Image: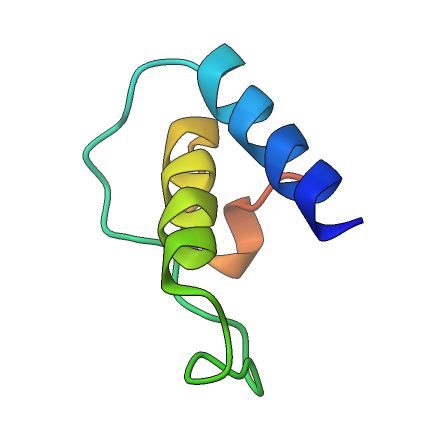
Length: 62
């Protein structure tokens, strides 16, 4: 299931617009960054950046 999710995130990143140059997407409160895969975090940050997400008020509803 995780592999399919990561593939979906990668696909979204490829289909998204060019990077905006914004700061990386901050983790949500309570997110276990130490227990998470650093590559998955980096990929998710790239996808969120390309989607134009930044603060909680501008994140797209997925």
